[in-house]
Structures are given as structure tokens and as C-alpha cells.
Image 1 (cartoon, rainbow, N blue to C red):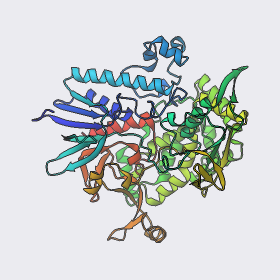
Image 2: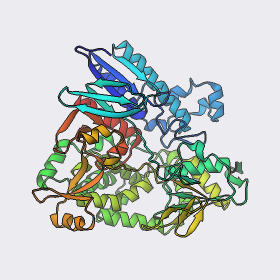
Image 3: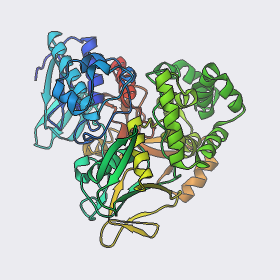
Image 4: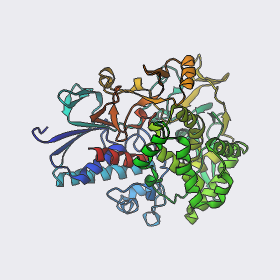
Length: 557
């Protein structure tokens, strides 16, 4: 690697997050910049969701072309250049494809891979030296504040020194019982491991998009889907095959509809000066209620005055209870059928379902100021708001909704609520025991977990205290004192008698820079791997998150 006056930068991971940070680096064309990308697989752009580690032929994206942040090629134009045999495999007619349609995930991965390759070519033309290390697994990251360098160690014992490192490692699925308990899967990824025929009931924990991925895979390998009179129908190969979903509230996610704001309100993130002004008025905190009013109700007032009239007097809790009660009183599959019809009309007429869109915007906009919430507001958000958001803005593709309805109609798919106290324990002979019922096969599908500080897979960052646990101060010390007596590990107190709630992941600032335990930012290490920043960045917003986070990082650089 070049030395001297050059700047040496590493990007850990080569998926969608790396694609967007690399896009911005190339666009800036910084002189003397040398970039090394470490990717554990043999291709760039795919990441986990869009390659064989996270998808199979049956899986589709939940975003359409018009919702994808700008890249080198427009998706509809790119489709026209895809070989005919590939398009035939996925039953895509390029003449009938437009930016409002979704793609199979593996094909979308090819699109992202092509965009990365075009950027690599552009980087070369701009004199940005880029080295891609494929099949390279990062074992550790060690910061040296004296030399002002960051060492990246690989599993094969190679090591490299850099001036800046951006951690873009994406999804991570920790193994708990998988491999130790027969018939237990800690996630449905890669889908090849659950691409099996079974002659018994399969239990699934969760009802999110992750669960739907598992259902599509299991359904494909255990039966036949066929259109009869325009309606998708399912026939199981074995009469004993069925799937039982277990979720906390017994709800299915909402069906994807037409988005008026195709990039989920990236312009609605509260400006830094507004955040500062509100914090100055509220003892250093940004009130969650203020964000709810500004990023949700204000948008409803503009876009759907009739709906606003129904909710204008509601606070966050009242609104969530109202919406949840409406969902819970309807059978989940009947509601899915209703929302499928609503979404079909929304997409056909290109008209949004505004309250759902504004909830998605709230979720996206909340990511960035969440680190300024009080501990009390963070707990309110996690307990009340996030369960609703996770149900409403999952944006289940229409074809996935058709799969669920077909399997349910055939008597091969049901959904049960387990409440807050539902238990999932390994069975004595394998499988799972769910509240006394045993299943031979179990797939945990609660989605990407927010990982704790101790689960960061780079021991050097933890041992050297380069990073610190994400913590939020209690507005009311008495509330913190009470919680501390219940759970010593979750709440800590400083020598000023301030109480702090420990939330998932590591501490970052607005530029996604690592922050140590003395609240000093690290100018060399940036973290945009969402599993490691879940406390300060509570929502996963996909490609929109990648675009917004990469901008914050590049502006800082």
C-alpha cells in the first residue's frame, strides 16, 4: 500500500452499506485517497439480504426501483441489459418492467454488484486506488491513538494499517442453539439450510419479513403453488406438513403500498440546530413527543387532514393503542386480505396510504436524534412505538402476501399470539418447546437482533476501550434508582448521581464515529453496521439508511 501523503482508508464489508460509502468517496474524488475493501464473500454489493447467504429464488425485495437511492444506473434501464435467460428464470418481461415494480432479491443483488463494479471503474479513472480483498474475514480492529492508525487483522493472520476505517459489516446472526440442538435454527439464513422436506409441523418465532422469508422457502420445498382463476393456491406434498407462527401480539405486518415520498422522508430529519434548541429547553434531552408531533402528526395534517382530525388530540401512547386495537380485533389473515386489496389500489392509482407512510418517515427520522432521548423516552419508544412500527412499515411485497394467504387458505399456516411471557426452549430430543407444545423443527425469525456492546466481534475495540456502551441518562433520577434496584446491569450511576440506562450496542455521535467511555470521539473509526448501533439507531431503514449514514460520514471526513 502506498505511503507518504496518501490517506489509507478501509471499508469492512462489501455489501449495500459499503456501496453507498464508496459511491460518496468516489463522487468527492479526494486526492491521494487509497481504499481497501474487505469482503468475506467473492462478490461486492450483495451483502446478506441479496446474496445466497440471505435469499433464494423465492425471495423478493420490499422496495421498488423508484424507492432506491440514486446509483449509477436506473433500475428499469438496467433490466433491459440483463440476459434473456436470467429474466426468463425470474419471469420478468423487460418491456413491461418499470420503476414501480419489485425484483427478486438475488437479481437485485446482481444489480448492486454491477453498480459497485461501475464505481470501481470510475474510481480508477479519478485516480482513487482501490484494492478489493475478497474472501477476507476481519478478525479484529485495533486502534493506536499514538500512531493515529487503525490496524485491521484478518483471520488468515494478515494485518494492515489505515488512517480511517468504516465498519459496514451489515447483518450478523449469533448462534445460540443451532448446531447443538437438532431441528433448531437460530435464523432462516442462509435459506439453503431450511430448504428441506418435512412431514410434521414447523414452528416459527416471529411474523416479520424474516418469518415470511422462512415461510416462502419452506412452502416452496414442501408443496406446490398454482394460480387457479387468478388466485394463488397451495397444495402440500405431505398431509402432516404445516407452519405455526408464534408472535408476541399475533399480528401480521402490513402489505407494501405506493410511497409518495419514495425515500422515506430523508429531508424530514430534524436539523441539528433545531435539535440543539429543543435540548437547551429540556435539560439536554430531545423529547420523543416533539419528534412524534413534528415527524408524524405534522405530515398527516399536510397530507391527510381527515385522518388528522381523528388523531389530533392523541399523544403517542393513545395513537398506538388506537391503531393496535383496530388491528388486534380483526383476524390477522382477514386483515392481510383487506390490506392486500388496499395496497393493490394504492399501487395501481399511485396514491399513498399517508398515515402508514408518515409512520415510516417517523421511524427513519427518529434514528438520528434517538441518542438525545431521555432513558424514559427510549423505554417508551421501545415498548409502545417500535412494536407498531415493526408491524406497519415492514412493507410485505404483494407476492409474499399472496403466499401467506394461499398457505393459510389451504390450512397449512396459522398464527398464534404468545404475549410478553411466551417461552421458546430446546426440547429434550431436539426441536423446541413453546408453552408446553413440542415441535421437531423450529426457526427463530424475530429478525436482526440489536446486539449488546459485549457482542461486538472485534475484541481489540472492547479491550482497549476504544468504544463504549451506548447509554442514555434518566430525566428523573428516582426512576433510574428504582430500575437499578431491579436490574443492576442495565442501569449505572456516575459520581454526580446521574443514572443511565444501558441500551444495545456501542455509542456513536451524529457522524457515526465511535465514542469512548470519556465521551471522546474517535476520528479514525466509523460504525454504520446496524447490529452494533441499535441503541442509538433503533430502526433499520435499509438502503435509505445506507445513503443517509454514508452522507454523515463523508461530511465528517
